[in-house]
Picture 1 (cartoon, helix red, strand yellow):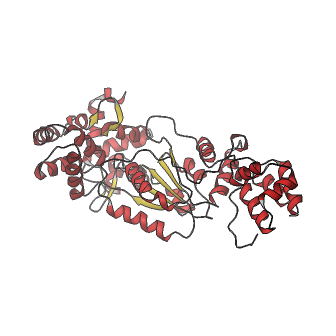
Picture 2: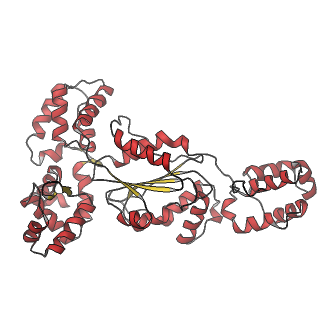
Picture 3: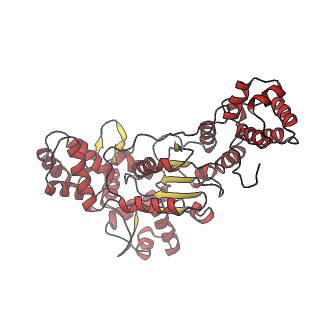
Length: 424
């Protein structure tokens, strides 16, 4: 086997290469090791798991100084019963996805320029469309990854238990063809086997809804190979940027033109027409937040402009009605209030109190000194508080006043203060 050859993906591939290098046919090798030709064929294709006995017999027949047995003993996870050439675990894409051309272009450029395995974080506030973007782009570029796509919803901020890295690694190893009995028990060993597999493959890995750096770090690819890991999170996951060199894309609300285009194209899919004036007003009232826009589109499923005018009148009240309208009964994943609630619930008591004060007394923005006075803390502590709230995308840096709270978040917090029943 030439040193310039790509590393073998599994035992069967190595056997085929060594046999070919010796000029030996599959039938001849089968005769020498006293196995059927069909058995050897299935081993070479990866459909049959090899045994140590077969490895020893083939080593002797090919006179390769124990190379096959050594490979089998040290790379058992690369000798699956079935090695899939493609695998796809992506959930269904958003049917009416539109816009985001600048972010899609950034992701395309990252894919084109990568010289090794890379990682990218798509972060942003609740309901901004991080998952929809990641899944849409993954479908668009999946064919460029020779060995397919892996996907896992890590469960951050959805009210369920966060997925453990060890469990996710087990699922990924199974998808990569590792037999259940060959999967290591420990998480660090699973992570090493996972990186080893990705080093010889081009795989797109989508890690959705990450809850923490600690949860994601074991799921990253090593630097070797051509895989790409795309993560979505409400958190900035700064530790991955500093230590692993992950790229970060901060996803913001849609631009007004994009939001209007989304509303009009989505309702057209339902054979409903909404005038540009009403579509624009709805986009403004929804603050161009994709989740809010999707809920509005759902409510515009019948009467077009008549429904739109009624929704505008409801949303313009700018009271608790706003969040009541922007929800689908029985599904927190389709509720702006529910989406914001899980981010709020994850805050410590001091941070949740700080958010309540900031949204109530400084809705148009606040700088560090003003925050220190409002919270009755030092400027250093105030800066830490502001940065912590910004890290979970409940406030944002502002050009004019340091940090500001979006009207949607301010309405949500006011809702909690005025209606304690919502907290339950």
